Image (tube, rainbow, N blue to C red):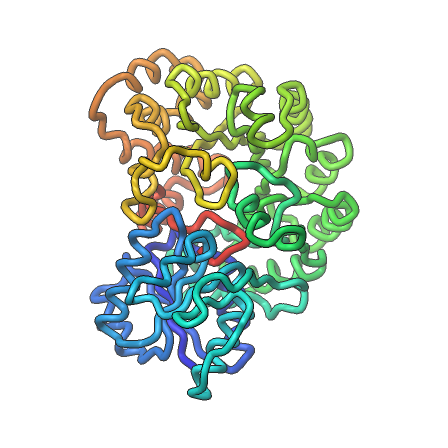
Length: 465
């Protein structure tokens, strides 16, 4: 079977899609990826490849795009279409759309490989866990891979045939899938509710496997900085001990990872420093301690301050991961989150606008008169109508990085109809290049090719989205 993947832009590069492609190839299938933003005319090139199945990584963050592509694929190619990722996982009723033949719920490797085998034989698809069909409907359970070490090495050439991705010296890797926590706003909590008790325990690759993946990429492509895209890196100290020694000895490249404050402690920080970690993203979410504890079930201010202090004293940059625009959040409450980052001494922060995800406890509690999740992109689907919070989204990093500019940022956030997006992209490129240790030309070149960060459709590390 010839399986064609379609994504919007290089900013959507997904290590899990590379995993799926490798898995399908190991089963005797052929795969190909077309990036809509870089392919003109898209459907002529798709038809020339002659796919048997069109697979669309479909994020809930850009459901409207995914359904449009499904309809265009059906019209131009007249081939079966399957949606993968967070959209069909949380909104299985997209199967009702005439252009969608199948949906994959959960992790895609096993359901899609079984589908390819059934289509190739020309028979009935039958009952496959995680694979929704027109006959069976979407309520088919969730699929997952239990042993990551048994997976073939990711098909990195899926993306690297595009020169900007291959040349960029910063590359993403996954050492695990899943998360230990159950934050009420996160897709992980939604998955746990769909498959109670088993679906998203952390499954971690062996250290040897992680190192081998990195070395395979470095042997063929430029690699100066490693980004671990895991939801939660280093969740097991014994694994981190082995990793620190092996990574330092065999790779010795600076890297970035995500961890929670409770795991940034006297045992983990020296190991991160020994391995060569340059920056850690720490999930702050909000500057209001009471709200943070309600959202995450953890998160005392003192714990975050101590985590930041430990990282900074070890020469590791602490990057605060924030969200503003929570349901009923006022501008002053959102501003409090910015002030909190400054007071804790966080040198850099990233921020997102809250998006109510179906299936999550918080998402289900949001009033139903919010914009349809199948329409638009991230900025249009925020849960707040306060234009000042939308402006703050673009200006947040500026004030955290340079606190002397807080007054200017607060004034600008109060202005109406500001066109901040181009400046936001330039600011983000500049701040990220400092963390990644790359030159301006490389950051700007990749940003130009990768596309608009606001239109990123992949934001779920354990799902093909």
